[in-house]
Image 1 (spheres, rainbow, N blue to C red):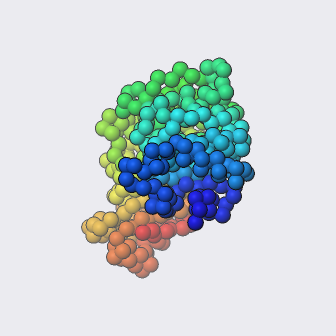
Image 2 (tube, rainbow, N blue to C red):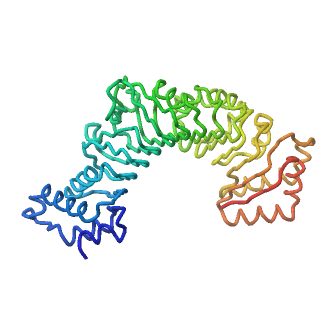
Image 3 (cartoon, rainbow, N blue to C red):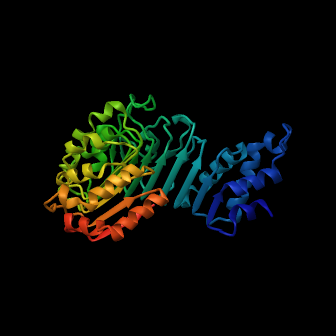
Length: 400
């Protein structure tokens, strides 16, 4: 098999540099001894292979690279290929630990996906922001500046002319956020942005305003409660979907702010059709009596919450239509308490609720506990009692 045949895998319009090919190439072409010709003449070799590829396959419009620890040859080869195909690329995916300081103008680029690890901001490529419709950036806490998108801009404003969908993970701008950021005085504009996904990222107020100011339709925010609050302080009137996810421990300085910040957010979401909150591995049972989430429509609680606490909370979430919770775990006592409550719910709650819940999903990871609960559901009157207390209830799903 030739280098070209292995690299293209029969796809003349797409280059894929993936782990199987890398392993094969290193075994066939890279001598591990220090005197290896390829090691000593890496730049010339990568340029020669890139030129051969470009000449043989002139119509390539997509480049994807997925490597864990790429050989220097591949680092240089990627740069040569990206630069060589720059004018015709419509998709570029880069998932690897190293980055290279090259310039990508790519006037036809539609989709850009960049994942880097263990590099400095000086190694990141510089990219023209005008053409991409979809951008995903995962920088793994690398120092970041929007200046990497300054190619083609002569002013202090960077305009993402066609960007519709933006996803950013581990992107930090605040210099206090883990000492991972760079001061940034540039102005940004996102005139067509409709979908924004932030994960474990800290954005300045100015950037948040820029992202939320042109008719954003879909916002998905994971990580810091404070970061989510910063975004949600902006006008939300154009949104039709808001998803907020908190997984793992809340930092101690944030825990005291959890209820006030979430109350502030979910009191602003009137008119948004789909408002979902996911809370996992953060046991907030003790403070659930203080929540005030009148416009929340979907709630997922990924921790064991006493069922009576849950039922007592329902008046605080009057527009909730979908509820998903973890119950029992491996604790038989919790299961017994839950089934006793639901079996005799009319004794504890003599008046049906006004809840709008239509779908209830119960996650029971332990198989035996799940079987026992389902048995109670079928023969202990639990379903009928829940339907009585939740008049709008249509579906109960028992999940693993």
